[in-house]
Length: 321
Figure (tube, rainbow, N blue to C red):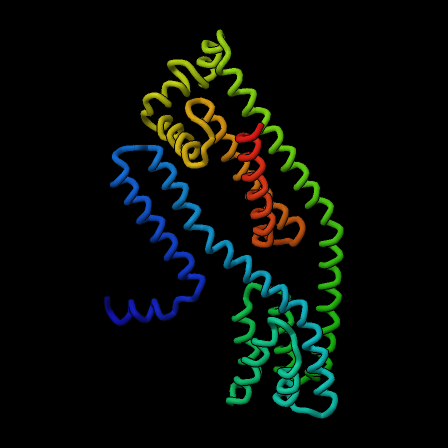
């Protein structure tokens, strides 16, 4: 490793570590499972699933927490600018006005305000301080638009305090509109929850019906025609998994073994619908976040709630009913 490589790693942010380290760990797990499984495709299939979860989960949750932090800063931006304007109107200089705001509580924004104050006190130009702030919160279009307007007013020699006052008012109006939109779309998010729980009920009923059908006499020939049983269907790949189809069957059989969903065709169908419920919960949650909060990452909390609820309901239904 040369000096350039070391410098590249030193520039890594937390997000970079959360992308590459989980991918490395999941790759190692998959390789070890292939080497130590003894050719058991169910073990390999489950290891691949586990590897994918390990790879994406940390990055998703980092982005969700980062989004919450950004939203919190946006909520307080208007208050911060208004306090800056009041201090400026009282005759304070920009550094003095910024110093006064460091004593107030703006939640997550307070940390960034203190950083800006320290930079100004060290002699960093005001324009550069604002640009650095914008780079640190680059995920927020609202904050960056506000910064650009203030910078333009500062460059042109205009009344910065008046510009800040206007921006503060505009930000407050925008946030109010966003909150109103969120409250109105909340009913659609609730509708998605209802649809998801209906999907769980249908999946449980279908799983019970299919397991019952495959155990009935005289149904094996029809099952074979649709690839769900018999010598040419799922029954064959359960007894002797081969090729891509065998890998898929082994994947669901492995899930059935891990969560105790039964054996044979019963385990296969239960694991199939179990996987469908978890995937549907995860994706529905992301969509609910896009509808309710205008952000896919904000849907992670909905994904977690739906997936956990689906997991618990399906396992209890299979075990107790």
